[in-house]
Image (cartoon, rainbow, N blue to C red; front, side, top):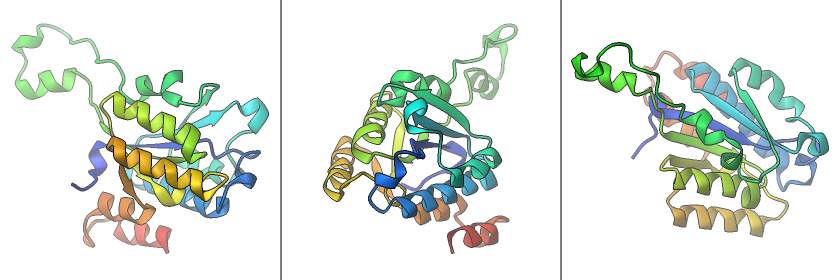
Length: 203
């Protein structure tokens, strides 16, 4: 099973100014988060960024600010460790729009469209992998989203905590991928009009 760009949404969890200096390989995780944001902007993938207790941990790091704007990212401030507990699920799966007229008289493809255009694949990365990222991803799985965790854009303070999170997520049904896997699966072909721009982002 490969990622489908038309079915994907991107969620980046808690890359915040007062948190990232304590993260193992934090600069590499941030660099890959920037790549994911730029890919999402390039391919028009809906994007969401969370910030845990921003009054204490600060806003998202400066490296993410311009790419977040380019990707038109919505920012969710939260106090719960799981962003789903703070309403992220409703952002990812908005309620269906009310149907105008008699829905049963519509052609089948329009009936489906009236039920809301759902993107059920969530590409997610963030910090800390064993806390906010883990709890958010597990709740998304419970809500029947397909969850793809971008491992090289995730971090924790220790390798053991980070890797334990990946083990648990894989066991729960999440797909573990890397930034380049996401990029090449979203693009699929060297003939894609954005192939060269994607290549430039990951080099």
